[in-house]
Amino acid sequence: MKIAIVYDSKSGTTEKMAQAVAEGVREAGAEPVLKRATEATPADLEAADGIILGSPGQFGLPSFPLKEFLDQTGQLWMEGKLVGKAGGVFVTNYTLHGGKEQTMLGLITFMLHHGMVVVGLPASAPGNAIRGSYYGASASQATGGPTEEDLAAARALGRRVAEVAGALARARASA
Image (cartoon, rainbow, N blue to C red; front, side, top):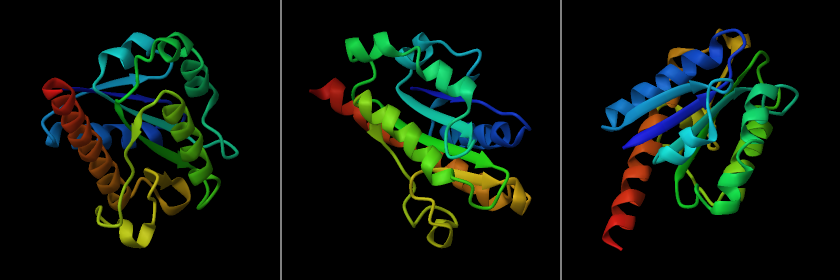
């Protein structure tokens, strides 16, 4: 079971979150495949059982390198290659709020267009009842992030996406 983690990182904050997501994927018994958006190819998404996207939020939007990569997946969309795969998202930004939810929703919209099964974070995820980041994991540099709580949420996201990807793969195999 492979989970592609495709991210962009400017200052290293998103990369730290990506590494925590990868830890969570490993905890669930899956193999994380970490790629920067500038190094990833659509084939990396097609080969994965699940996909987790990470980006710094820039004015409520994903970064240009990640968006440019996602724009290259039209052929995958036309052939339905990502339909039924589990997906999750994580974002970072400098300010306390700064459009993190809007950025996550933009990435989730990409997944919905591809027919993916979006996996968020319930209130029961570590520290999330108070944080309320139900769309995915997030961190802000304004609060010194990623904090240990941010990293715990990122690990939880990685575990959840890997677990759901495994369940979906088992369901397809038995169908």
